[in-house]
Length: 429
Image: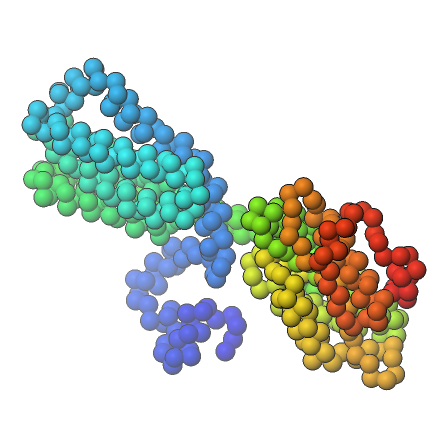
């Protein structure tokens, strides 16, 4: 099955049914040509949504402050606002009118505002906003019914509420269209049930539908531009943070990620591990096999090591030359020892012949591992130094083995390498 097929079509092919695009209606095919789906494949969509949500967070917070401030002033100031309420709403309706304003609109706006200042924002803000906005529309319909008896109307506010999901609340296209549709339905159904089905209201509903359609078109165009920009940035970032030969992360990405992981682990009291891996006798490999064969060897070794970093916070990188590094979050010594045995076995299964030896010797690597629990007063450089010392010790003991250090970290003095020069020179030979 060709890899270029979309996932939905692969699934359809496996099940024996027609591909999804062949089952679409003529209208669906026409609509998809005009408005292609605004969705990335796989995990990239989730990454984009998290980025976009954080990117618009300050804007959302600033806008929500406006209705919160206006409603608080109306509730606390009294005086002229009470007179205005008396002019707009009949006495028998004022209690319900105030309930809509201060019992529903104000608390929900305050709740959304508070969410933008807390960790709740990332996970709950958008789903809650998709419910709150249609509820607000229903409140506006009820308040409009009260004001209609006095000869006033809130219809002029409805286009603003209709456009808010597109341009205020940071929703992606599907979320915004779904929310706006609920807002329009609430307005139309509420008005009909409230007996406000006049010619003027029908005209206002048409205007509302026009605003919803116009907002959807403009929002689609903006979302498309934002997604293209995000994708370009991601591609550029990936090219800067990837090793050109092996395709895994490079030293630059390793340094940045190690610093972030150290801080995160120190806050969470989580242990971390660093594996420094060096291909044994690699200079001789290049001398006898040539640099092209050496490059092919590096790519194969990188593929083995990259399988070790499967979790989101783990990372495999080419540290330099024939040396690689693996960062593992929330990982203790027993798991590190097990993983190192798996890595040695995986490389042995590749059976890469070493051209410098005539006795069918295979390519091997040495691993130096450091397992520590980060402390805020210490630096990540100490972790790297400990793993480096463990690597040189592994090579000194004969190569093709693993040395794990953890307790040694307590006496380590960052910047003072404890492996003797003689041992290092022997190991490098």
